[in-house]
Length: 434
Image (cartoon, rainbow, N blue to C red; front, side, top):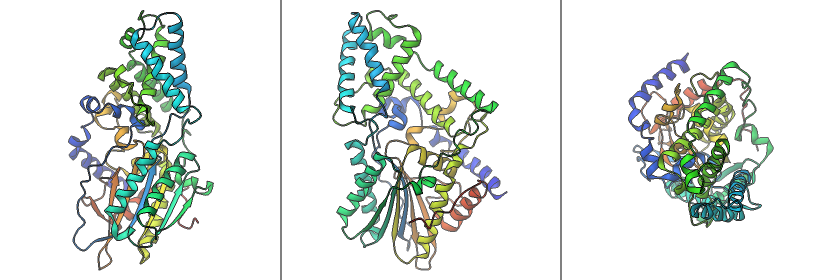
């Protein structure tokens, strides 16, 4: 019952913060086109604006979950299939000057990614080094001593390398740090747990959702103008192939910002309206993936229950200790996004019926850019009272607790999220993992 009451209280909080939520707009994407890449958006530089801790409170523990840094595309499908469309058109003498230039660009991109698909790039490596440096400098009370740092990663190469870059930077700033690194299958149940994902795919509501989503994607795919500037005959490709090519080029364009030394962008191929429409479809995908669309009957974000359990357990252990410490976790967008929704961080949890209105309330690039991270910073005063501050992508974030942030009472934090976890079955304790 407490969870239900707090949930509705949070609804009033969302209403009161509607102005900030509504900042997602065509204008925002037009100003920074890279945001149209959604989860491919390269990590932005944080504002650095942080509220000082209340008098007498000293940071003593940081709990963190970070997505891997910028990577190459997972596979060659989109880039190579787009290139084949253009190669065939070139062979048929149907490419415009822009079409030929785009073909050369695709050659460069494919050559750059060859045998490195899905791998962390130097861009991603630098993102984690910079995040680590800012964390170190922001909390010298924690990192200036020979503290223990427990760093864990999923077993995916790019996540392990992200952990390595982060920890290497910390170690360079203080060689006395005692850092342990793990990338074990044993930790996967909380690091990136998708065991229940898709369990409701066959339900009537899920079938309706997929039909709605497919129709939404169809309405947002208008390749006609792009075909007219790539090909001498705008009808060179049939409608279905034109839509396929346009979408593939958008996908490739989105990832260029994450690659090393490319030196050009494919976003200029698209108008601002086209970028907005393609982004809307991608944004809706992630929203539905979590089970947040109003007609869905899933709660896929509850897959983060074990991760939240780990955060609470390890925080309790750190609070009981007299020594500062840090817990670092390195995983995926599919790890951090459910956690954000489950915890109602900022507007990560919301319900929308009309996908055409989704962009006003929910934006993937604000939640899961490359190197996305959430940091829980714990403070204690001389009397032993503990406060918690949460940072999303290094910006102060809000939680649905009874007191206003950015500093929350640990007891309120613990009580609220223990109540949340009490409604999720099969949550396992992980504090004892070695």
